[in-house]
Length: 215
Image 1 (cartoon, rainbow, N blue to C red):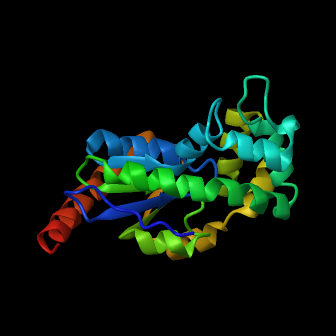
Image 2 (image 1 turned 45 degrees about the horizontal axis):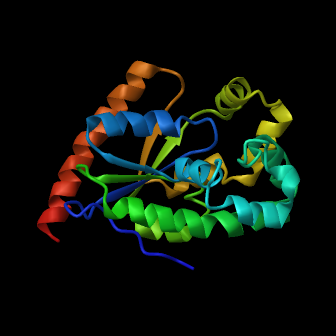
């Protein structure tokens, strides 16, 4: 099921922001948000759906068993991550539960979003042609793969093999860059990152203004 996504009422212009695990998508999105963009993070929505009391919990319990639900009633993310990235069929089974719910919640959030323009943060945007069709431009947050691995190992306490398994299930760096209209390099230089975001924000403001005028 494909649910059309809408932009804020005052902005028919939208960005699809993506990047590999550990690339810094959330950091970049937060910088754009501070400048006035409306941010809808599909990964944050997935966390809400699988948190204690989340609407996806019972379907996950039915599909995968009680072992994947923690004592707090939330999905055991570490156990599920290890399970689905070991077997692509299991990953697709989880996606079949979560993706329709994420689309629904994303559409609701977009309908009431307020901002100069809308940014959808979508980790698997390049893997989904439907997402690329729903956004005006694709922005890729890029960094060296070794930096990705080091960040995720430090942040999540994963082994190198676990991080590499997740990266192998995602689009390659080359595929993301090929799909990009815009690229932000995030190789740990915070000043350069902030400058790139500010420059693109000015560009996006102008494009959003033009899109509203032509609406």
